[in-house]
View (spheres, rainbow, N blue to C red):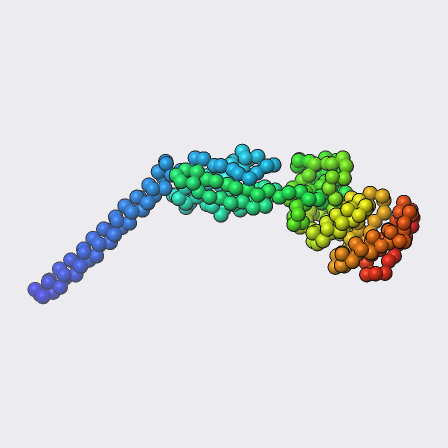
Amino acid sequence: MTEKGDILASSRRLKRKRILFRAALGAAGFLVSFAAVSALFYIPALRIKNIVVRGNSILESAEIISAVTQTINGKYVGIFPKDSILVFPKEKISAELAKKFGRIKRVSVKRGFPDSLSVTIEERKPTALFCQENKQNYAANFASKPGVGNENVCYFIDQDGIVFEPAPNFSDNVYVKFYAEGGEAASGAGIPEKISGFKKMMWFAEAARNSGVDIIKVAMAKERMKKFYSSEGWFIMLNENDDFQTAFENLKLALGEKIKDNRKYLEYLDLRFGNKLFYKYK
């Protein structure tokens, strides 16, 4: 090899060494930085130790704290602890709580430095009940759930029509009870997540009650027909898309001018045809 070739080879070796040195230096710097950042997440003073629950009245704070604790156990990619106040899984906590506790309507999770979490709960408030009359299927499927016995299986409904958790058996008409008349739900195949047209139906039931007609049950029949059963044993037929305000006015007119003192003989009032009134006695 010539002298010039030796010089070029030596120069290339030197460049390779410099590149390797810089790469090693960069890798060492990255590892040191990574270790420093990782150590920050492991600082005991920044690990979550206190979980404070607010806003709950029915749900037990201990159950909520236990669910949050389970969610922040473990590590991200096997390295970073989830219970660090710096990187705790805020969105996952909210999602897991909403999934586990049907009564939760809204949840807010906030950090409190250096080691606290604040969990604020808004609970759903029961407005009515969704019930199943198929005793055989539901006694087997829900025997282990709270409030479920050998009678009708009922679930609470909130003001938005959300069916959210099993309800105990009530001895009187504390709540209006909604039933699915016919179809899959009535045969025990499933519980709806939400009752379609719930606010509209509750408005009618409450308006009727305020006018002396105690609505205790609403049967949701096929073809979107609704049957509002009174405590006197007769019922009112309406379609979901009807004008319930007009129907209510027609109800008062029918009872005040047509039916009068014969309500105890009444079987049903059909208010599905606008101002045309149809009724039948038993």
